[in-house]
Every structure is written in structure tokens, then in C-alpha cells.
Image 1 (cartoon, rainbow, N blue to C red):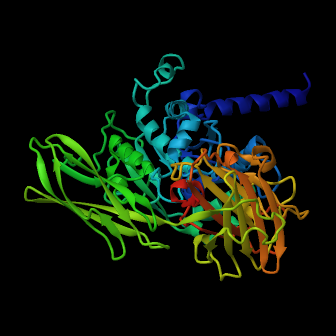
Image 2: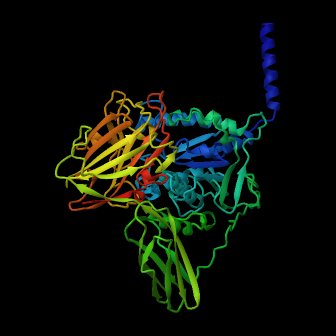
Image 3: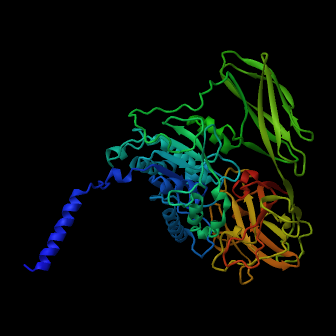
Length: 636
């Protein structure tokens, strides 16, 4: 044998012996490969933004295994870097997300394959469209497979401006926390799929809204010198389709991030600074930590009946024993200004004796209640509903508190409600269609509505010249006519003819009609976003966030539109048939809103999101997805 060959073989043998002598780390496989420390549950790609720095701190700084789960791929969002929409946009956003999570150190990414169908404020509509049980089953499967120590998710409270999909993610994560440990829930996963029940040790909501708050510093350097907040800024910049490209300069990502401890099967300290404190548990037995002792139900409960979203949330909170994180959440009641509104009080008497007493209502000057006082009797072990009529002043009164007191059998009971007034208008009837050529012909008898610069929904408006509008509305018994004259000192046209969607990205007008005049969600509504001009100078529009989304020529082909440039802005006119809105014969009242979107970036890129402000006739955060808070119009 050649001497060189012998030398090579001897060297190889030496390497093999050395390798055999070295201790080796067992390769993880099967269930061990999937064992996870943290699962984050979100609605859309980029929803991890509020806790991205925290995830980076654990994944990169403590080598924790992190998995993120997303209900959708974000296919219903906007697109600031291209023309992809629908499923094609979902593919783009998934690619952006995976690049983001790689930078954060998040190891696994899963999707529940639900549709991002529109912006809504309704968790009920969201879960109905997704199918709550099948979506929960998919999430429980992942929890049982990954066996996380903790789950972090979004707060499911229905606060104004909180996306219904975000609420749904929080609801699903909360229920999966318990369902994954229950052998009666989705038992085929145990008998057919080889999984076992698993009880995560802790559940956190993002933000601080409860009794036990964990504050996580994210501006302290990791072992390699990098700072989690800076890592998050770099990672989140990958969401370029959502205009996150400049996140590298976001100082708020350096601030400590707060989480509310919702449920725990691990000891809880007074001050929480570590989401994984005391984990994994060494003791084989685990027991739930009782955060807030369940307060025995009082013999008598007096409370106002809230809007449906809050009533449902309140029931859900009680069912899952989350009172300790929901104490600060107060619902309000929309009431139409200048008219009597029915407000309901509920009195529950669980005692063995009937109760009789005097009920009195207290309101600020200018508000009236009828009757302001009355005698109320509630039978033993019974519940009764009391209706009162509350009339706010006409115009635009501010939100106010309503106090009810019931003095019965020597005891005094109180209930408070926040009343949110809505504007109203009577819409004139005209004999024929007004001109749709930008002129005033035929609009003289139309009802005029002001959308002032101070009617702010979001952003900042300098003055009336920056953004304001006069809206004229009329009808002929078959069609509603709307004329919106917008003052805008910088009119931007950065939307191409093949990119007619996401009207909030640029200068636009949104017309909102609700045939139910107070619906809990927009699925029965007609919502139309109108670009006064695309890049070729043509008025274009698309329905958005209702049950019939898409280009107006496809989804509402009988709707007619026109727009012209004016010396101080632009003017949009629309003629919309009753049947496309969904109005029934003889119907007079409907919900209505006009929202004006303004972006003053003169050098805006094509398709770029330049939204600077939103003003509306009826204002409130997230009002575009909340028909209950739209104004009311009556057809004369």
C-alpha cells in the first residue's frame, strides 16, 4: 500500500476515534423537536409589532424557542409596494413575515388559514365568518403539539379602534389555553393524531390592563451587544407592503413592553419582570393561581344594557373568569342627538323577597330623561328590564355620563353608563336627479352637512383649508344622491388604474350606508371608497369592508360617480340606487357617514400609503368599521 494512502487512513481513523470520544448532544426529534417556550397568537402578519422586541429578547438573548401563530395571511390589507391583492397579497405578506421572524429569532411560524376579509370592529362577525370551532381546533392542535410554557396574544376587549380580527385572536388564544388541557375538547387529536393534553403555564395579553403587569426591558444589550429594540426595528422593516420600511428609526420600540398576566399555573410575584419566571416547573403537579377571588353575586344587581359587542364581551369575561383584566373596560351606548332614545336598565333580584323602590336618573344640563324617576318593583328571584327615553341636545353634544340610582328597602343601588351622541339629518326629496357633471344644478334643495376640520377621527388637520368638506344629500325615492365638496390644499393622485383598493392610502372619500341604522358590524352595509382621480385623472371607487367588496363597476354597477378638481380641492358626486344600498320599500331611516381621507405628500410614490388624517361627519376611532356609531339620516 502506498505510504500516502496509509497516512490518510491513519489520520481518518484518528479523527473517527476522537469524534467517538467527544460527548454529543442528542438530536432532537419528534415531540422534543417541537417543544416550545413561547407561542404568540396574532390575527395578521405584522401584528407581532407590539411585542417584537420582547420576542427577540427571549429568542436571541435567552435562546428560548418561540413560535408565532397567525389566523390569516393578511390578504385583506393594503399594499404599498405593488399591485398584489387577495391571495397574491397573502403570499407576499407571508414572505415578508418570515424574513421578519428570522431576524427576531422566532423559530416556527404557523397559520390557521382563515381569511383576512376586511376591517371590522366586530369579533362576532369575525368568528362567524371564520368558523369559531374549527379555528379553535386548529389552534388547540398547535398548542398540544408545541407544548408551550406560555402564550402571549392580543387583548380581546372591544375598545373603539380595536380590529375585530385582533379581538378574535385574543379570544381564540384564551380559549385554547384551557381547551388544550381538556381531554373532552377535540378528542380525536388525542385518539387519532397521537397528541396529548397540555396545560400552558401562563397566558399574557399585550399591554397593561389588569392587576398583574409584567414589564419587559428591551433596550438592554444582549450577550452579543445587540439591543432587542433595535433588532425589532430592523425585523419589522420587512413588512414593506404595510409601509413599515422606515421602522428602523422608531424610538418607541426601545421602550419597555408591558404585558398583562391573565392566567397562571406558576407562582406569581408582586412585580413581574420575566414572562418565563419559574419555568419550566419542577413539581409534577400544577394548580391554577387565583388572581381575583370570585366576588359573590350581590342579591341585587342594577346595570345598563350595553351595546351588543360589550354585552357579549361581558358574558365571555365572566365565563372565563377574567374579571381581573376587564375591570377598566367600560362600554358605552350610542344615542341620536336631538331625539328620544330608548335606554334599557336591567335589575336582577336574586333574594327571596320582592323589592320595591324609587328609580331616579341624573343627567347634565340640556339632557332629559323620560321619566326621570319612577317606582320600580322586582319580584323575588326575578329580573326586570326598565326602558327610559333619553334625549341629548341637538347638534354635537359631547359624550356624557348617565347615573341611575334605585333606593329600595333602605338600600341604594347605582349604575353608570357613558352615552355617545350621534348626529342626524333629514334628507330632502327631489323630483329628479341633480346634475352629475360637477355643477350645482339640482343640488339647491339638497340637505347640507358639514364635516369640519375639527371632526377628527385620526391624525392631525391644520385648518379647514387642509381638510374639511361640505356634504349635500338628496333622494328621489329610488336613488340617494351625495355631493362631497372637499377642501384640500394638496390633492395627491398616486393610485394607478390597476390599483383601485385601499382608499385610505391616499386622498379619498368614503360613503357609508347602514340599512339597519345601528348594526353591530358592516356585513349588511354599503361602504364605498372613492378616489377622486387615479393617475390618469379618472374617478374610481371600490366597495370595502362590507359583504360585497371589490371594484364598484363589478359590485355596484348601477352606482354613478363623477369628480372634478376645484380651486381649493376637489368635488365628488355619487348616485346610488336604493337596491344597491339594501334599502327596503318605504324605509326612511338608515345609518350614514362620510369619511374624508387626506394625505399631503406631494412626491408620493405610486401606491404609497400617505394617509395623514381622517375626518368624518360622525367621529370616533375605528368608526369606519362600527355602524352603531354612524350618524342617522331620515329620508323625507
